[in-house]
Image (cartoon, rainbow, N blue to C red; front, side):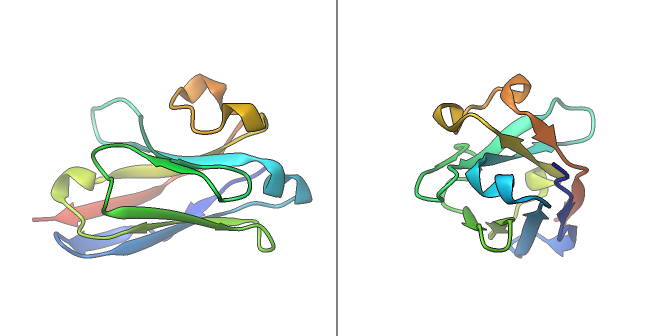
Length: 125
């Protein structure tokens, strides 16, 4: 499963961006999906996750209330709406898919089966 992310760019603090991750293959609609990010010089960290149906979502405390996950299984797309962006949100954002439904929401990088190339988000102060 290929999971290329797109939608990154340069934005001022307080601004918004919408990232998307679109996959090929019908099986994608049965996978839980998560977003992770990696800032320069730092380890990759969990951002948010959504269950296969889209009915359950979980967010990192650092983005709760500002970021919103959604998915459209007809289009094999998971989107991350990012509002009220802060300079500390600057990172490379990538999405990952998990085949196990029971494992949805895990923050463990090693649990995910598929990863895609990221998209860079830069928030200026």
